[in-house]
Structures are given as C-alpha cells and as structure tokens.
Image 1 (cartoon, rainbow, N blue to C red):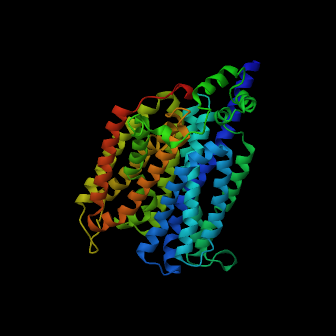
Image 2 (spheres, helix red, strand yellow):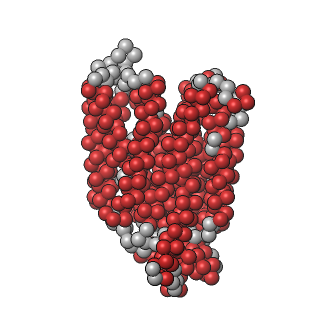
Image 3 (cartoon, one colour):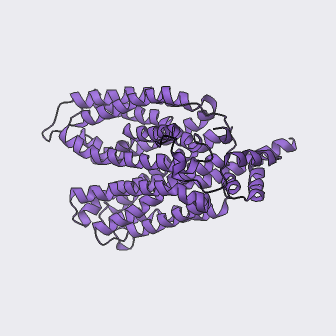
Length: 466
C-alpha cells in the first residue's frame, strides 16, 4: 500500500471521526424532541394540566428551537463552531436534569424550552461544521450523518420510554428509588448530553472559521489532517471567499432592493416543505394516530418503534447514494413517493366508516394498506427529504453567508414544525384525518415542482465555488 493511500485512508477516518462527534448534536436533537412522547400523558396527570397547557408544554420547545437556530449562526461566527457545540451541550444537560425535577407544568415547560434552544443551536451547528470540514467527495455522506443521528436519537428515546414504562408498569408508576418513571425518561438524556460536550472539546475548530479569524497556521494544520498534502492553495481559496474585514451580518443576506437573497428564500422553502409534508405528525402523534384508526395501545407503540427502525434503515440508504446519484434526483424521487403514499392515506382515512366516537375505523385490508402506506411514506422521506435537505442547507450557501443563512432556514424549519404539530390535533378533531393528510399530500406535490425548478445540483462542487 502506497503512503498516499495510507494518508488518504487515515484522513478519511479522521474526518468521519470529527463529523461523528459533531453529529452527536443531531442525536440529542432527535432524542430531546421524541423523549416527551412516552411521558406526556403522565405529566398531564401529575400536574393536573389541561389540554392547552399540555399542548404548550410539548410545542413551545419547538419555538425555543427556532430561537436557538436563529441565534446559532451569530454565536458560531463570533465564538467558533466548537464553543457553540459546548454551549448547546450544557443547555441539553441542564434541561434534562430540570425536566425530570419540575414542581408544576409551567416550570416543566421552561426546562423544555431551554432544551429546545439547545436543539435549535445543534440543528444549525452540526450541518455547518460537517460541511466545512468535509472533502467535497465525502460531503454528502458525512452531511447525512446529521439526519442519521437525529433518527437514531428518536429511536433510542422511544426505546428508553418503552423500556422504562414497561419496567415500571406505566409512566406514572414509581421506577428506580421510588421516583416516577416519567422523570427517569428525561434523565436518560443526561449521559449523551455530557458526552456531546466532551466530544466537542476534543475536535478541531472549522478551518473556514479559523481563516475568517486570521488564524491561518491553525487552519492549515486542520486541513492537512483532513485533506493531506499541500493545503496552501486551499487556504488561499478560502481566504478569497471569506469576508475578513468584519463579522458576517444578517444584512449580508439582503439583495440590493432590500429583500432576502434568492438563495436564502430557496433555503427557507426547502426547510418549510420538509416539515409541511407532515413527517413529525407520524413521530409526535403516531400512537394517537394508530389508536384513532382502531389499533390497541400496545400495537400502536410497537408500530411507532417499527416506524423508527424504518427511518434509520432508509437514512442509511441515503448515505450510500447521496454522493453517487446527487441531491436533486433523490429529492425528486422522494417527492413523487411521498405524494403517492400520502394520497393513498388521504383516500383511506377520508372514506373510512366512522365509529361511535367519530374516528375513522379501518378494518381488514384498509387497515393493512394504511399501515403499508404510512411506512412507505416514512421510507420515501427517509432516503430523500429527511437527510438531503440537511446536506443541501450545509453546502448551498457561500462561505460569506453560510452560518447566517443556515440560521434563518433552520429557524423557519422549527416554526413550520411548530405549526404542523399544533394544528394537527384541531384539524383531526374538526375535519378528520383525511383532511389533515390531504394538506400534507398537497405539500408533497408542491415539493416536487419546487425541486424541479429551484434546486441546482451541488454534488462534487467545492464550498468555495458555491
């Protein structure tokens, strides 16, 4: 084996290692947003909370995420990507401890919002850092690590909830040391939150941030480990594209006529459509959803875990193919698949006979078909819009505006997530499941045309050439 091949292998391993450490933020992002799934009923009972208070306890964390995402770019450009990760890990840890120790619904909501801010920061920093540290031929696959970490985080959180609830008898029952099981559900987040902070302290700063700060010898050192060989030309290239006279500002995102740059609008469009296809309804409300169409509580929980596993498998497919086929083809195929599967669910839910409580009652083949369509929908989202949107958001903006533009796009993603999450229960109650899925079908069809007309392929293009 030649020394060049050995060097390339060791630099690839090094890049995977640091990208994996950054993606731990994605794991906590998934874990934190899903862990409440198993605890929400017990919390409502423990604090005698009404449906509005319970709904706010779940959804206000998403607005916290929008705030965290909005300011993350500023923090990352001023203090560096690594310090932003450490700050995020501290917030995750405090939120996990506090969420398990609340005295009432409102201080519980405060701890959840704090965790939401951490999620928002992590959702911006990980894709930016991974894109900035990855060689162009690996960038798609490494960028997909963020989504893989998110779906693994969701899956592990659901498994922890399930295991604790089953061991204790229910989420309200006492678990270890006589402390209620639902409190332990939140405390399971403490070890990964601490690990994230420790990992962040062990990885190098982004070379593009270092060049922007005039710390070029440090940047050269990091780039040598990432790329191998002579990196002086690369440093010069980064220097040309990074604005060094001042810190990037949100005003950099404005065009001459005062509106947002077209590329920023495209980033916002990608973010909003990723949420408007209704993916989080499947993950936040899946057990309610399956019980609404006639499955038992036990079966509903099992289906939720299976859906989480499907999501992980499909994200692995995306990692295998995103640098081979490119971003645009995967998104187009995903949009077509989501439109067809959501359309099928809309038809089934819309035409199902209603039971005494007014819920659609899917019996026999219709129930099986809905189950297959739902998991195929997760499959189509999982290899396309789930991971590829994060890859694109990490790489589609030029060096000068990346952190600021990513902040705006990610903040809008959380606002869209909040809107979808908070509107699903009233739509379900007043108009039925068919109407809810009809809206998500329209969003999926819109996403197809959006990709076709507005998205350019970024596969294999250096960040300096964006």
